Length: 544
Image 1: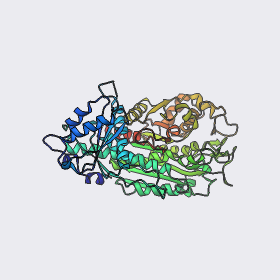
Image 2 (image 1 turned 60 degrees about the vertical axis):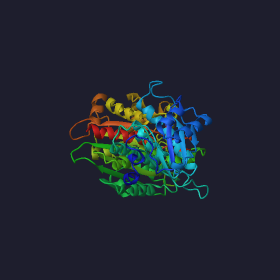
Image 3 (image 1 turned 120 degrees about the vertical axis):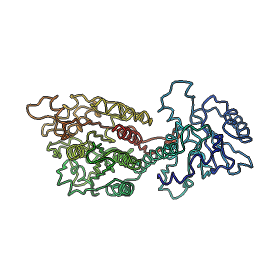
Image 4 (image 1 turned 120 degrees about the horizontal axis):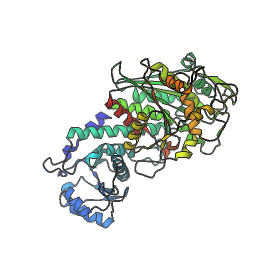
């Protein structure tokens, strides 16, 4: 991707270096110009564009009734012989100007994403081939992500009514430049990687389960990440999982005819002694619910129950593409949850990799089972200083937070602060959820095993699930004669140095899908919170 972006004509080549105005012969056939609500369009366009183009477009904009409201897009058609190649100008609204009310940088970036994506989609539908985006320099990265996201095609399986070929999109500058050409290009490339990574997660989540089996997903990851610098991808088979004693993962997988895989991705961008970040993603490539089968309505969306796996794999793609100076290990347990003849049954007892026994009270609470073995494996074998898991884990999360926020469970204030900052910057919003010890106790009330995979109470389903996962970060939380505080401290100290692991569980069930509302969304799977995860890792890498 970086080579592709660098091959595009950089911003300065579209400018008169003396004035920062549009050059006499631009190499794009369409231009995107964002405008704030209440802007005097005639004045704005005549300031940005040379005459007679500015005057002509100002007249057209007034006639079209453009108000600059967020996501409002008007396509104008210039007729200037000296600029014959320029066929369309998309005037797109960004809502209230920054000075009209207090807005955070993340909110302003999101407005840029929404408006640019709307314009790119509109221009593509009219046959544009080369689109220049005249976004303010502060929002170049956001605009690049938006352009990439806008070009996502969810209709790859259709044989008719295919969209036109994706246009080339690049930034141009129509006002006095503050950034160097190198800095502007770097920002555009970085933003494009963010969008491209989210598109990968979207496509993997949107792909039907017969085409995205555990083996197929592993092959997809190898195809996209294998060639990247400092990346190794290993797909372990069930014999390996048996040797690791991953009884929870294998128990879920045994009901399907599709072979399970345990995918391990390593990115080594820092020295051997540098701290490691751990990522774990739930990879249930189709979830029927197992013996406790789900209702048929909406079951087709369970092809995306590997959304956590898609997001963390796409995050690894972004990390490696941007060559971040950090070490990351990513583990993805991949299987289907099917009601086959060998499927785990309600009441069965499975033994986890850490030796704890788990009574399966509901086979549709399978995600926490496969994650448990993966969390224990990463936390004890690879000993990360920070460990995140991402999963479409509980319907209760969608009930609690809807489709606006991802729920985050962590006892680390510093980790929460960093994740929240990254989420706000990318407008992939996060909300901190409680991790009270009482939620853990209700998961220990099995009559026959150490733990149950479901609480006997219907309340706080997302919280009890999170505390179940927490049992598998490091060693088992409780040991004989150990009080809760000491057990908590010991369980988090899995590094040889004795430093605590900062752990967070992200439940993305509510944000799994999106509707075609704002500019870069589509009807389908969202790929959230891939951009927020990449942003978090980037700030973590820079801090080191």
